[in-house]
Image 1 (cartoon, rainbow, N blue to C red):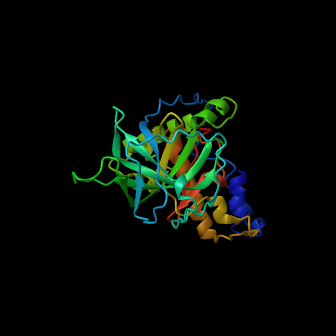
Image 2: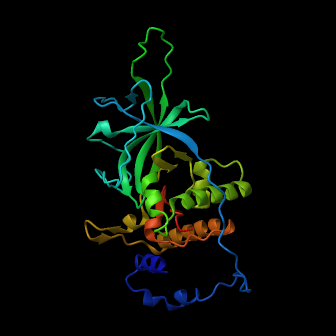
Image 3: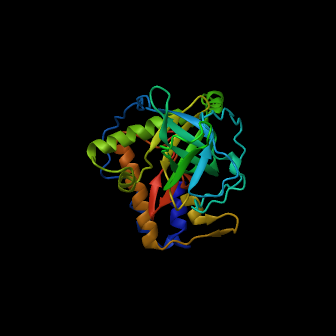
Length: 308
């Protein structure tokens, strides 16, 4: 309710001019008349793919290629408090000048036998810190195939950086084990809920790409769920508009965006469409806020299912 009131405030400085419009939401005519409810859904176990975290070699200035050592050594550091916020910029700008290239790493997808595949995610700047870790801007990378027999065995491995942008929620297993039972937000339940909602939507709306499903359902889908011995990675499509809260309020400047009534109505309808997608799957979000909404291509998307 606080979120909707804030959205209403963003449209006009005098909402008392529209008393009838606020009263029409006193009841919902299509809500079931019975008082029967159901128990919270016991989400099925999530499906994840094994991954390996490898460090990118420093000193490379080419933006279209990065290198890793031969042998794919694990980056075993488990950053307990995830304090690296060298660029906590939620605007999600695609321009990214990393000051410390040596901190870059690639999360490489592995097969069932533990062999590294030819695709991974290049983790770059920190977009936002979270309870269990942080959200990082990422690019899809693909291992460059070399057929030259003269290439030394210890030569660096080349990875081509594609233009596919992602957001990777990087969560420490150490922090999850310590805080999961003490916090209402549950990162494991979050990935379960994302996959559950996504499967339900795909059953009724087949043959949709991840991007199409995201725009149509108004709910953030999961591109990949990866894990290794240190981290759980939730890979999601990248949203170019950042958080809805930051779209409305610039805390640094102390200013707020004034939405037109049509724009506010459009965003509110999209939020309701996202809630409807979840409720059609039998899921209640339980933590709706402006911070849990993202903007992408003028669409408002529901995110963060940690309390669903």
